Length: 286
Length: 275
Image (tube, rainbow over all chains, first blue to last red; front, side, top):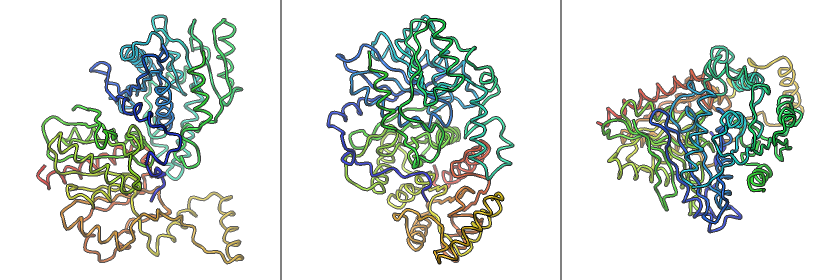
């Protein structure tokens, strides 16, 4: 019975292209908890090298099922960046992943504070002076909310950031209904949840008021927005707003289409090679 | 309750997070990957389980098997089944040496259930085995129920498609079977029966839960009993069919229900083994 795919034989030898020195980078990865005692966050730190890049990279997770889907991609990307000498911190925002708290406690406001906490932790651990933030979906939105004058952010890479919150909620709910199609009563009873995760009334309210007008774009930060749907009205409005205001913002076509919520990884790549390559380029280019 | 990320096993390549309660219980629990999902499990169910179990006094590790999540790919060339058993035994060794725990409960969902099954057979320290949508054995009734359920759920256009498929099948004399094959590694009916007898004989508690999301393989509440009619192990294992749950326990109500079932059963196992 294997509806969820079984991983292939986990031998290192079966993975072409893995060099002996990669093992060192893997073993130097450090999983740990950080943050205040009231809000313990789980992070995985991948060190850079002393002669490596003078900046680090902070990965911001999407919400719910999207965060589960993205875990493998983030893990592989973090290892590659670490091998290239760049320090990376992956972390789970409060109420998600291995961090403490429940999904009922998740708010955009709380998550934005978590980004700032994680940023400080990355700077402390790696001694870098500036940090690039990478955020996918709601992780990108959260990054936009978290950035402020006191935080030294070099670049923000936002992959399919959620700009139209109402549409996002509607999409999650319709995917939820599709996933549970044989159980319509179950779907009807759980109106405050989506794809396996509770969504608090506060978060729902925050999503309802999220749109291009409500997003404040930072100054002096290089913002790269990546999407396979560059005609998305909300994204286009955000970029237009930024360009009009003289911000350093650019919209790029994604090299790979992401399946953000699928539970059938047999039919879609968890780590699309072209997407991975594009992310590497976006982080490392001058 | 405290949580600590730990590394152990060959080259410290395996990673898990241990949730410990106040006090020092003598039974531990290990939850693991389902498919390629990292240690948090489908919809974070392993995190919810680990914390609920720790609240009830049971130390729990959520484990990444070799090559999944934060655990490194293994150095050996062993097949996934053997490697999974090695990984789970390494996790038990670690919990025994660091926490003094000598009895374990293994909880697996989908492929995790199968991995837990092999490890339970290989290691006598396992006192409890919970398999959610693990190994399935069809009866003569299973395909009939499957077709009936598919028929009940179908829209008009799907019904027309089904009738068309029957016509095509009858005219081309193809096999009527549409059941996908399960993994060839999975035990035969006789092997499963022998394994269950062995686990029961050594007083290992077994809890088999089947969701309503694997209709192709298991789809009615007596299927296991019909498949193993008269088997000695049957009265001694807990078996439950939960038609309102899906395969990855998506609905939060189902998650609460699942966690509650596991908690109560784990406490019974703990009590039976003297914790």
